[in-house]
Amino acid sequence: MSYQVLARKWRPRDFASLVGQEHVVKALRHALEAKRLHHAYLFTGTRGVGKTTLARILAKCLNCETGITPEPCNRCSACLEIDGGRFPDLIEIDAATNTGIDEMRALQDNAAYVPVRGRFKVFVIDEVHMLSKNAFASMLKTLEEPPAHIKFILATTDPQKVPVTVLSRCLQFNLKQMPRAAIVAHLSRILPEEKIQFDPEALALIARAAAGSMRDALSLLDQAISHGAGKLAAASVREMLGAVDETYLLRLLEALTAGDGAALAAIADEMQSRSLSFDSALQDLASLLLRLTLAQTVPGALEEDLPEYARLMALAQAIDPETVQLCYQIALQGRDDLSLAPDEHAGFLMTLLRMLVFRPGETKSSDVKPKTQQSSFDGNWTALVQKLPLSGAAKELARNASSWWCRRP
Ligand SMILES: [Zn+2]
Image (cartoon, protein in one colour):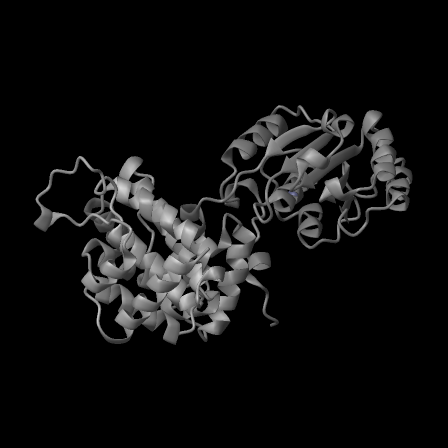
């Protein structure tokens, strides 16, 4: 038997198996039960959130041989043919590839004929915003006076580009991005059925990379399964995703919290020996700092199934919120400065040292702490490098970076 990709194999076939989008499902169920059917629906939402899946389920609800129903039987020939993509009265058009007026004229002609097999002739137009102006005008003629046997289901990632004249004739539903927890839950249901062992952390990594798209999550899962030779280990998934291992960033923040400059330099060296991108590292560090701020300010904002949840929460307690804010600023600025630095490693290390030496409020002249406890920074980088607990190559590098910093325009 040929291998079927997971995204197709696990494509939901009815409302009950659809993950997320409860608000849309509820409204559609209600309309189907009450037989209050609109002639045109518009599903909006980012890619991979289930717009065309929902369109096909709705097509079955309308054409199932058991009658118009929110629970299509999935057994009659109409249901099976719609699932198999061979139902003659379900016409799917991808406007991204058919933007032309000819296709819309053909659609207009086709719409005049009664359905061959079904109750309704259903036109699904994906990425409808891509239609040309003339094509929209032509479609509008059918939308304005639709024959009773016609249903339109339009889908788009960009509703702002759909003309108002079209929008006003559609019942609009906005599909939400898939929450990470919903993706993880769905993948954890699929994998045992596929008889594949997995690390929960691997799923969290995939869910994060999928950025709200269930389809992307399933494609990544497919890739990860072949990459890991049938197993899903966190290390192998991380390697596949090319993600900067977040443990580096967590170690950096832990070294910062401990005020350990030598550890900071050692971790930066380790990252360089692994040829990690310092630009992505600073970007990821900024997003990690955002998560710390969330953990500090919005209780329950962090999903507990995050792979690094415990360490994040510990950091959130150990670093004060102002310092997190300042480090975030320094990370952003550091990214900007990378291209100006002697080299990326130096720019990265300098950014980390800046996080180490700057502490909010400590440079105030009103600071009354005894001199021996004071760690304020007066802008003298040369003196600072002398004071830092660095040695060997790291000290040399810090010295070079500081003299470059002082000479910069
Ligand atoms: Zn059926």
